[in-house]
Length: 307
Ligand SMILES: Cc1ncc(COP(=O)(O)O)c(C=O)c1O
Image (cartoon, rainbow, N blue to C red; front, side, top):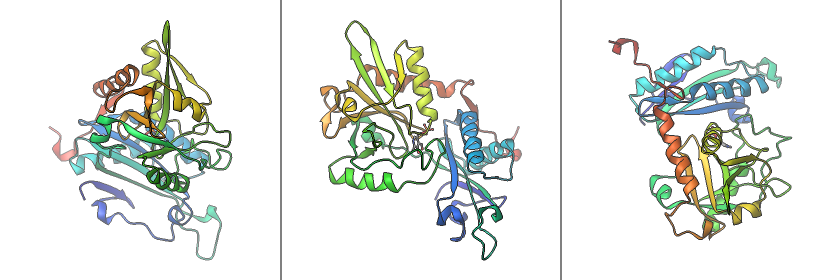
């Protein structure tokens, strides 16, 4: 497997990065993580990912034992050592193991790890060309009052069972509603709906609650506002998604990706591969920001490689 991992203070091959089955990160999903990406040799919005990771660590009372700058250096070095130009770069912190015989999380030594692997697309390039077939699940997202979705977490049983049910219905991915029938998010992405308005700029809507505050979501909101579109973060009913003129998802794993069908019906009545103008504009805007030094930083060369 191509890539590089960091565990127990050392850089290792991905296949050698292993944790104990007694780590609560594995036994209880007691962990948090963040995923940034590198595109054409540059990290995209790395500080926003580190900010979110630090908020998640604090909320879960996890101490990675490294500073923010050490985390940044480890991420850079994983990518440089792996020799990747386009990479998926994850940092994570697990609770670790309690002292033998104890169930007290305060006795655990938390563990910081990281890895860089080749870029992972949330929808492969073929699906991106024709648009993704999205199913609105009957199963609800874990309530935000129980597991705060703003803390990036591995509580994915609802997503995974939702995915299997979506496949059974001929879909390719899934979005989960909350108890009120509002759309939340999907496995690894946020959701947007666009409504055309005669005589006015299109309206762009994304759920305001029950979701991870995605870095790509924020980028899409900023781009939409800069383009002069009214953009609302508010509850979005599943029925609104079904009648929207455009639907797209946002994720570090591919940016802005068009949804071609919701529950088997073509979005906006369009043919496969024909996307709405707002989705197309935001998609181009998203990738254009990757070369902009206000949003991206070059992967640092390894010390020996510096000129
Ligand atoms: C549940 C969930 N929602 C949304 C997102 C999108 O967030 P971002 O744009 O920061 O990748 C992710 C990313 O992995 C996620 O896991």
